[in-house]
Amino acid sequence: MAQQTYRGQDRYGMAVIVNFADKVFVAGGPERISAYAGEVVRWTLINTTKNDVKVELASLKQAYGAGPEDPFEEGKRWVVVPRHEAKGNHKAEIVLKLKEPGAFKGEVARYHYEIQIQGQPGSTIDPDLDIWP
Image: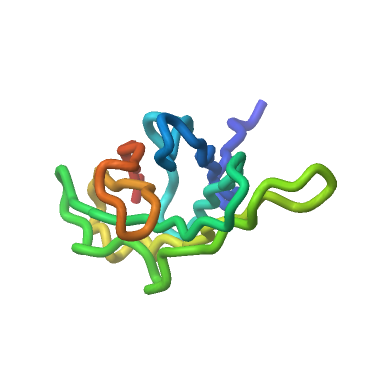
């Protein structure tokens, strides 16, 4: 039987925006996402607060590997997540495509990043992104 591969599929992460002690925070999500170069990574953001919230993928730093300083093709890293309503949409996505395999010089690369409320350092989750060439 031929070995199955998952290359070419989107990779998923998530985060939940919550109120706690009169402050808004980002919680939840996987500790690490693994993807192949050239794939799309989608973060689903769920807003449980009563206000629209601007969320950003920030503080992208390479931990190891020979990949580029920025592994994504797109520059936009933020999205407005609509407020929670009983019958309304309270979700949004950050969708970014990883650069092609040649940008990673045949090596696995790991990046640390944060998903945070825009302009509010410390409101974050800080997972890792592993990229396979």
